[in-house]
Image (tube, rainbow, N blue to C red):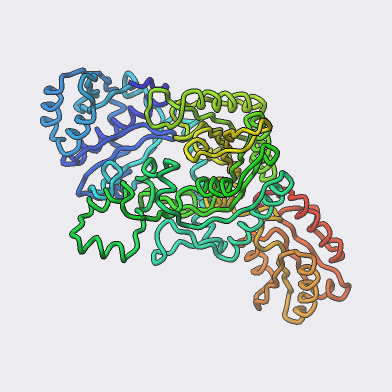
Length: 613
């Protein structure tokens, strides 16, 4: 049994109280599971009653009654036969017997009881229900039993709990702020992206404004890569299945990949032979027929580029970078705007190096990640070192190779000067990694940026370079992605800035607001001058009052408004109202205003005020 923290025990206990309350109010409900999570807890229910907001309030009120009764949590250890009997007496065979079957023979089987309620559970819990002092139910979502869309969809009630009411209040305020910043709503309102059912769930359509945001990020990182000696490459969206068999991505990531693609002529031939689906799968597995795969990873193709010519020790390091689009199959219930998608573009790079270059190259990768965070005002982060679990069989390669890779990352992370933690069992199947977990402006954490050391894929692909001794040697690989997924990174960025981007990232940097149609000619003259300086500028040509134009520009989160009245036009000046840099406010020459905005763009200055009320 995993030892829980005091907060996890509170949240786990709250999940049991939730189930207790639901059964009191709706005794025909079938229960599945209710674990604690990083941000609270949930419980999955099978009920014919839809859990509407009114019913959630009713359930929350009943939970408060259960807590007030100060029921004791008691652990009951039972035999498997006794467990079956308890589950049947509870009328909970539908899902709980399956969960009982998940417990291996010889492992302790336990229930926890509070009041009239018993639940199959390893624990642990608080002593009494009154220890749950601050909780709140949050929302309801659909959830397939065991996460499989082939199974029945259940109702998942989410909640949270904290040790104190002040902590709960702070969290609820954070949730409200997060709603205002929801990238799905802002993305729609600001014309950044669209997800269309006809195109497919989890497949992002970048609209013109979103494309500008992405292009600015790509341009920024590309310039940094050029300074560090990277070479840009392009690779196809599909590749032969054999490529991913060699790398190990197939079948290791098979459950999260789209099925292999087989040409229709081959399928017709197999069908005429009476080949069943299982026969087809076996033939693909054995390589008897040729299949292709939507690219789940960029690294195998970069490996083949490295291997396309003979390499000398003098050529290394070779740094190959690509904004490469990959495809993963995510359950529909797990998709979330841009932050969880099925097709995404990685700012991916793979470095092929000599072992003696390892530390310097890791430092270069870490420095690039830190630069990205610094430029974007994401300087509050922690570092996680993901290592292999020696007892697991999911990892490929020798123990010696893993020890060297893990040692290199441990040595590198110590130079960052930040706290880090090690997580056993979280490494990629081919190598350990450093992940950066960033805290945004409202305190939420996001995993962004990764650096991985890999001795194993070079071995699997038999890569080599000619050393100074004129002998062949195996290179080491580093996988790194400062942004990670462009879709996910932009989704996080939208929420981090609440859509109020720094001027250099803003799709529209300046909006000209003429007070009436007579001033449009002067507005167009200003427009031409600003656009010639590379400043993204538009003119509001609507025949609306100035106040309405200003409110629209504020809603559209334009960094700089230039108001043009009769006096400004006569004097050849402009009146500036800036969200990002209030020091620009006031009447000035257009040239002076443009110079300051250009400087702000060049220096990638962060907004002086993130939100202007």
